[in-house]
Structures are given as C-alpha cells and as structure tokens.
Amino acid sequence: MTPEEHQQELQRLERELRQKETELRLRELESKINQEDVNFYQTTKIKDKETGAKLWQSRAIIGLKLFGLLVVGIALVRVASFLASALIVSTLVFVGYKLFLEKRNKK
Image 1: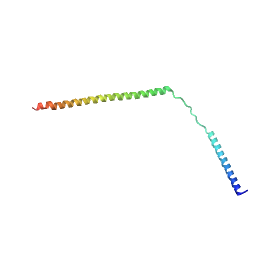
Image 2: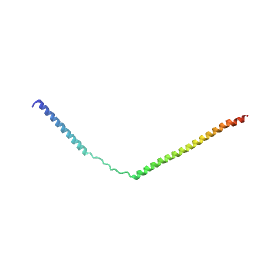
Image 3: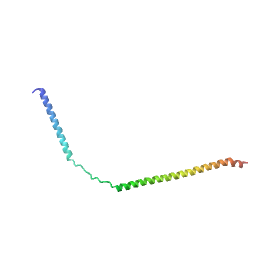
Image 4: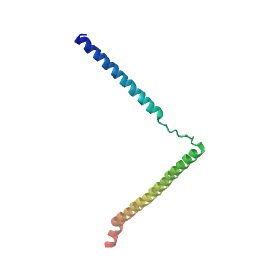
C-alpha cells in the first residue's frame, strides 16, 4: 500500500466515523425529544354574553364621561359668555359716565 492510498483510506475511515457520530447524536436527540412529556392545557371558549356585557358596560361608561364633559363644557361657555357680557356692559357704562355725566357734575 502506497502512502497516498493509506492517506485516502484514513480519510474515508474518518468520514465514516463522523457520519456514525452524527447519526448517533441525532438518535440521542430524537430519543430525548420523545421522552419529554409535553403539558397540554385544555382551552376554553370565552362566552360571548360575558364579553358582550363587559364591552357594552365599558362603552356606556365612556359615553357617560363624554356626556359629562359636554355638559361641563357648555356650562363653562355660558359662564364665560356671561362674564364677557358683564365686562362689556360695565365698560360701556363706565365710558358713558366719563364722557357724558362727569362733565355735567363738574360744572
């Protein structure tokens, strides 16, 4: 046997050995996977009535909050409108007094 043939034979044996090792490792992994118990949990369907009632309740609460904000907003606008009107009227009365009545009182 020549050294070249001997080298080729060694390489072939190494390949076979690596192949056997990988096959053995794969078998070990498969057996390990098959041995483990997988926990299965029973699933349940959510009842539509419960979710529908909760959804309706949350929407009603949001609607009432928005209605409350609307009422408060309208009240604030009315108060601001009244204050602005009072300020405008009082300013006009003051200016009218200064222009027309104050000069007559000084004479």
